[in-house]
Length: 235
Length: 311
Image (cartoon, rainbow over all chains, first blue to last red; front, side, top):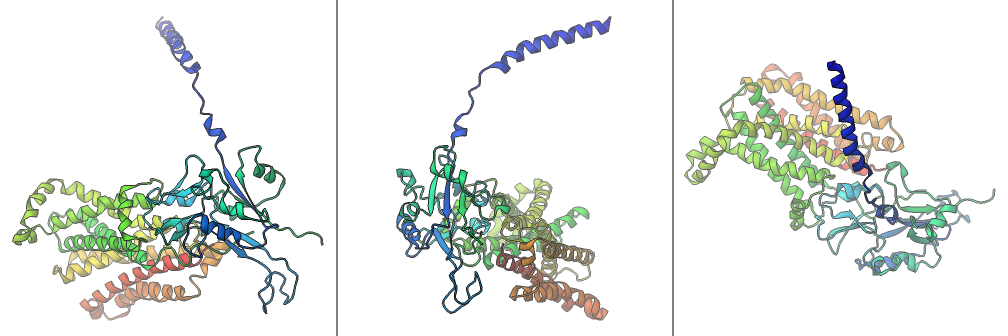
């Protein structure tokens, strides 16, 4: 008898609860659709096209008003011997080894150590573009980001006395709808810049067909810079 | 495909940061020892060791802050660290801990030197403050003990996030820094308590500390061996960082400063000499100085050798 009452009360409770919770579960909540279309800006460096002319460095210097001789990107010369010394590539004194260059600059990590270690939030991700950039007015100059960067791609800007990094010319060019200065100035199309989340962008199509690599992927930083390496052809 | 160049030359954090790590370690370690003794032995008076530890912790952490601020690219920017916070940053969390810890070390000094402050007329303005803080002495001391431990560990966590450097980027570092902070803090407190506050060289408190010295040193050695082993048997980057122990100027600093002065010095002074010498004041001070210099060498070694051997 008492068991029946218990059961009846339980069933009543279930009914009432379903009446209350049912409609609540069915209410239409607006899905946050803005997230899916967020841009992810990437830069592709094609080693096959780069001649090491260094125009990118000069363009960077003027576009970002940097101290003389300073730029946010460097070119590392990797093969082709120094005069009078054995070629680091083949070991011979005289050779026809191709000269290789590698762009050295902020890798614009998706999982950026500089952003997570910065005590003041000066190194931050621009909310609109997702680009890692600096808020100069917040940086205390502690250099934590410089030590934390696995690529040693950050530096102290001697003019402002605060840390700095390549942010794809976010304020000087991108905000005006222009491409980064180095990309604009590169005569050999060795640099390609664009939004990889846009299916119609050139970088999206390029990376769909070209093999590219990322620097030091073992750090789990997920860099946005992609490198198309020189691949030895033939025998 | 890789590059070896970088946008920054040299190491990001030079010697003032090592000095800061050293001073913060002594400050935290001294208080950990003094407060732990106070709680375990249920002391109610201001013992010479307590006075020494309170004074040392306040002075060293203040000097440490000075080092930290002077190492900023522009020291006038230091207020930004106090105004803006980022809770994923170990440094920011450390700032919060230090903002509570530094005033507490000052409060502990007020407690410790109450009688001395009463004796000096010029400091009488502090007396109402002391009587106001007196009822909460116990909880504040407990909080200080926790924070002192945290500050020691924080100095380790702070640099262990630098993922590029295998010697620094280890899980053991905070534990090593707690152990070495406690041993150097204890040594500093012992020396100041005898030298300034006239503690008896063979008092029961100091005896207890002498006894605790060796297990702490063994723990330190164990942690260092753990780091060295994990590098020697690790991947390519770890193996190249292992050469910090075997070659170069930093290896010399390690073997002479950390092992020779810091570990062998006190061991030889206490066990390899005659009983009359090892129980003398000379041996007491010399061994204390050895422990503290060893700790300074350890911080310098970790910071410089660590940042030298990057991946």
